[in-house]
Length: 323
Image (tube, rainbow, N blue to C red):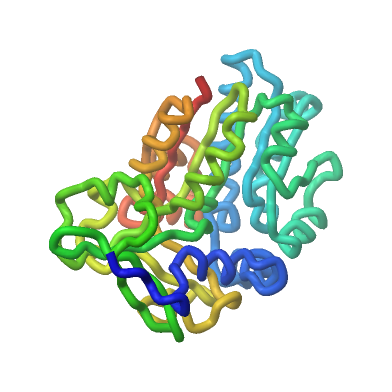
């Protein structure tokens, strides 16, 4: 295999700096809020619907397993989701609620602290939140996995080439480093030229803290699909950026590092398989439509979130349990 020139930067390393650099990264310092005045909106900024559904799932877990009501939200956004979840929990049960938020963004943490109750606890690392919960918790996230850097590959006739960057230009080279574990890379269904992404950084992050997770459930909500459906009619993959609610594709994704969100769809087949390897049993997997419909009103916001031709099918909900 040909070695990649030293001047080239692998895509996930570029994304790590562009999104998470402590001084210049988009999530670390430059994102100010989400929603109408931010670069993108989330389900939680549009309606209280998701908070109602998650609070029901968490309460069911606590009741059925006689477990303390320890909730750990990873990536708190502007605090809208936490606010709606706390409000949706019956008043009496709120007395024993312990709510933790894990967030690496200083600007978003500050915004959360301005609007949420003082008894909410904040952490930079999920290990600290788990320690405060004695390893027993209901852990959840909304649009978290897509915020992790990805490695990108393109199918050649008999191998996979990996994406590197130099001067905002793309270069593909045969893999000179270990190929990550992914259902997409193991598949023989791709045509030559197909591009795919792998959230290897999320896999590593997951394996780092799961040994501290003794008992509970993990709820993951994000846009994406299972493989091979994920790349159906998507020969160029799913990598893109967002700035002021505008979708950006192609070389423009790399032109403004630190000033825009860079993301890719989530391969839920990978999440299921990675979880099984780490003793996480899959309890359910469904669309956002199926997850939210029992709690939805007739408001335009709720109906938008469950529309089968939009957010209702684009977002998926994976529930896993530590065994």
